[in-house]
Amino acid sequence: MNLEFKVEGGDFTLAGNASSQIKKMLKQLNVDPRIVKRVVIALYEAEVNIVAHAYRGVIYAEIDPRGVRLKLEDEGPGIPDINQAMTPGFSTASAQVREMGFGAGMGLPNISENADEFKIESEVGKGTTLFINFKF
Amino acid sequence: MSSTTYNRALEILNDVCIGCSHCMKVCPTEALRVKGGKAKIHSDWCIDCGECYRICPNRAIRVMDDDFKQIFKYTKRVLLVPSVFFAQFDDSIPRDRIFEIIGELGFTDVCSVEQSVDTLLDEEREYVKNAEKPVISSFCPAVIRLIQVRFPSLVDRIMTLLPPLEITAQYYKKRHEVDGGNPDELGLFYLTPCIGKIAAVKSPVGGYTSPITGVINMDYFFNKVYLAYKQRIPITTKVRVSGEISSKGILYPTTGGESRHIEGRTLAIDGMANVTDFLEMLENEEIEGVDFLELRACDESCAGGILSHRNRFLTAETMRNYAAQVPDTHNLVQDYKKYTSAVIHMEQIEPRSMVKYDWDIEIALEKMEKARELKDLFPGIDCGACGAPSCEALAEDIAKGQGDITSCIFLRTIYEKRGELGIDEAVKIMEKIWGDSRFDKR
Image (cartoon, rainbow over all chains, first blue to last red):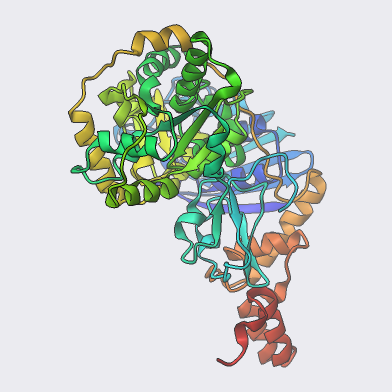
């Protein structure tokens, strides 16, 4: 099954919509709750990243009997130094975003930790694409 | 009734139900449908919250309480009375008079359910210190069942301590044994303001067997007591009253009555929709740094209990007034520690899977995909004219082979417009959902 969700930059009210929808489906498919939890944590984090850092993005999700594959493609500033962004605690979030409880700088490492496979591609000035895969 | 190992607390009376669909719209697990003009419960999905009972305008839903007469099978007949019961009466009616009437109606002993709260709260504080956060209160049976069915990944957050009712019942059983009483002569009856508690006593969770003999419906019993009060029945018997209760105990079943005694960051959330929203967020790990959650299915917690007849705000007010008159501890606290500290813990609660489509993920995916396609065909107004609570629920039913696309009144109108469906057929479809006589001229 293929799903697609649009994400708008700056709209924190709707952040989490894709992860809620996917969570609901995985639960209805009786996927192991521990896997559902990992998917939701990683996807929510990645979804909020688009809202907080990019202008807009699209989340593509593919669910089949073997697992979930997620691709999050955004139009945004891109990440100049991916290694630095993958360091726990590193953050570029503004004070305003931090005040809302986001931007503690644990995003990417946390996504990677919860995923079975994780890949990141980024081009400065264009945008970032994440590939996050989970096996059932 | 469909076969299940799980005891139901609710039953639809087919001869009374008019298939008005009010219940279908309020069910938090979408466990109800209307077929042949009657509401039908999908029992594996029901969590016994009683929202359907509360809204039913025709009293077509029966509570599976126990027959009152069975109390006379026992020589020692103890009624466990929750503090909500006293708050069913106006402040002007003396509590002693209520006790006398309870005795006259057949009970030999009366005791306050929340007598064990002081001891339980001490245990809760210790428990929360060492447990994974946030700890979810184990008090509300409808919330526990909601988590088991809809939020299985959160079952391990439910506190593994017994609710006050069970601890108090254990105490009375132990005391009876210590006093040399014959266990067969003891009947422990719980006066319940809550439908969920009936199911909780009959099918307890957490590897536990309840010592409670039977459950009495509070709405029914209130009427019996109030009638006796109004008719000024003469008092001929003497009832033993174990009325020890602290202000903490009285307020424990009200909103905030539990969480305010727990250290750290705590939240008290009442109302089924509020609880469900919050559990969604908790499951998504959007909530951080909360130590304890008091979650209650009813607005104003037990003061708004399904079997509480009085306005919930007045009930809660009376409970606060009552609490203001009593000290914050009572004489039996030490005794409770001695007798019940060994039995206060229960085992981990297990999830109750709600199989939506199929156990086989391949088949489930196929059906889910079909349901998504179908959903797009429907108008999205969730009118319920198809006999399902929402367009999404109808799409799911059809994908599972339990519904038909022509049940949708919008699609049917399209078919009729195209000349693909005759009026007789359309009427037949409606009769299948809403009952045979529904469309006859009056």
